Length: 428
Image (cartoon, rainbow, N blue to C red):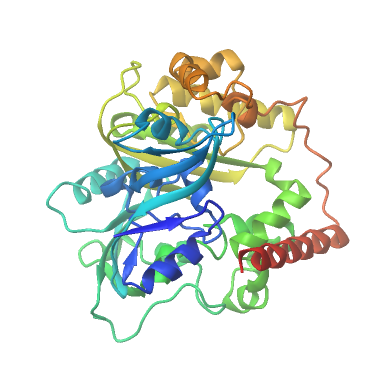
């Protein structure tokens, strides 16, 4: 019930291979191009994380090359467990990860997904708490808040039975983007009798790939969004609207600096207050809500209760993804305000996102003594440290002129497509 994988294996390739044996990893990040190494080193969670925790909690052991050239094995609860737990979320700053032993669970053909309409953030959080209680038989739980007063919680069970007359898919060019489909089911009128879809397993696992949740609608080629918001336009441009190509083009164009892209973990008790802050200060919607099981946390994943104390239990991941301020100085200040309020409420951010902490602020949140102790013990002092790898500053990370031209837009899209094809050949 395990699979051995190298770090550059992508999630869709991993799932394809394990399904040949009727098995899947318990936690599968929603974008097919996310790699095993990236999920382990960069703190990945998904709608099954309320049951299993982060992706790294499903990894039994890793092979890692230390900076002195020694090749060692570290496991979650056995040999060198301190190195294993320290490397999770540390962005390769304790050594080079070269092999992963990943736990597997039995797979089913379909996911029976029920959409529970909710009102405000308080209603959404209460519904997710109820759905994640022990004794419930759900395999997947997450939610989307579409506005201050409207959202949907999605709860799923794996099954081999197709209860619907037809399957709902999300991978085809004619299919709806998942968040749009979920929003169509969020009507208050459906609360008494929520609607349910039967979805092929792989379509469910990578349901957010087309459109990158909802970020695809912000690409300049598709503005104004109204003329793209129909199935004909989405079919025509579908080849460019999957995450691999879309993200390549966003980074090639440097437009990633134009958006607030933050994943934030908070105690359930303070999540509602944080959502109110986001609504009042940013007005960004939709928001992704994903409950997380927190057990033995590692340094860069610790989520406390606002008093510096780390407590076990259910936490909530909030994805804040949307347009930022046009003025870059204001953009940085907005991100810093978000980080500050997060810390005040006992939360932590996923460090793959742009990070604007000062060094002093960063190490006030994370245990530098524990981290540096591991770097000394395992000969990693010569490697870059995690703050140096994740920090962003206005002077070191200037935003380029982002005025869009048709030639530039096409260049970035085609560049992203070419890079995707090249990466695909490497995987093959």
